[in-house]
Amino acid sequence: MLEGIHNIVLMGAYQYVRARRSFGIRQQVRLGMNVVLARDLTDAMYDLAQKPFVSHESGTELVIEHIERFWCPSILGDDLTRVTGVDHV
Image 1 (cartoon, rainbow, N blue to C red):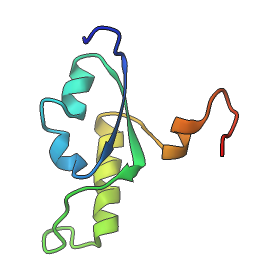
Image 2 (image 1 turned 120 degrees about the vertical axis):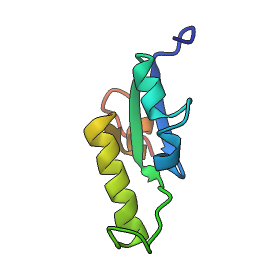
Image 3 (image 1 turned 135 degrees about the vertical axis):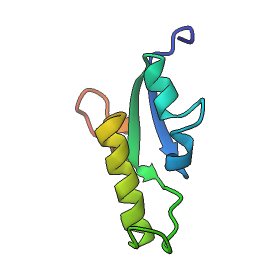
Image 4 (image 1 turned 30 degrees about the vertical axis):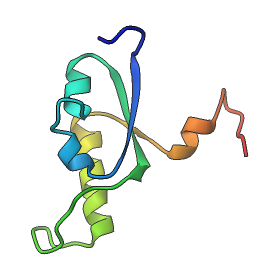
């Protein structure tokens, strides 16, 4: 484990591809990190011409659901700006 780093929030594009990389969700979970996915700050690479033939948004949601089911929970981006239950604007 990296010195002092225990909690990781992953976000960004192409999460399905990144999940498999050495710095991705799977590896961080295997290293014992506390990992969450910022679901509304995430996009997935999805080909509409392949199964299950759904929109890009639906394909991204399917990828996020897979990550939540098998790898880590998710949060919303707004959760990153909250401190002890106080909402900041």
